[in-house]
Image (cartoon, rainbow, N blue to C red; front, top):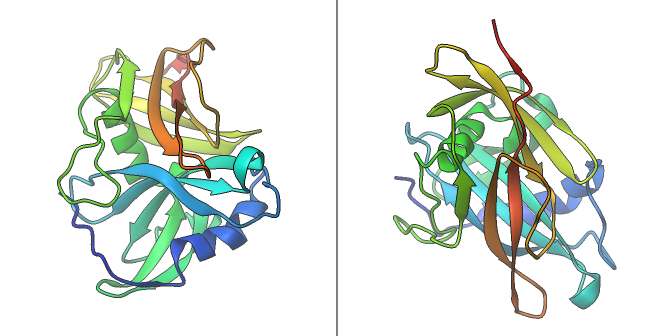
Length: 223
């Protein structure tokens, strides 16, 4: 179980995101942006207890002009080898010291736990309370395997596609987990093999709900 330290971070996560978000191809600037504010999210536990995992929703803009982005992040006590391109920045944590903060779609620990959540083998945790499940995060997916590992990730228009390889089955397959970077409220009827939905807050204080991650059709069977 991850321990949430209620302490300072310098610079803060939102300060880092203010500089990082406009560099992303999927970023849609809200009115007067970039001025991201926290709008919800959830956490996942790393079974090894080494990596912090957070899915943060951030609102950019005000009222009807606001755009809400989903930013999965990992927090590490040392650099992740080969992931320089995914580094959001570093921050000094009041308890843990220097933390390397990554775009979690490129971090194998986050990707493995995201698949575990979709497969029913992990539980979404409250964003700011220890050992508190978040029942508003709901997965609707019938997996063909209990676990999967990161193969590659690439940004698209309004999303990031994570290709994963399933594990523990005689015939490994590749699936795409599409992380929706721009969140839109409402019921989604777009074809998908599975879907993760969650809540987030709008600038007026109301709660919105919609799809966060889609499981797309199998890309191919590996020999």
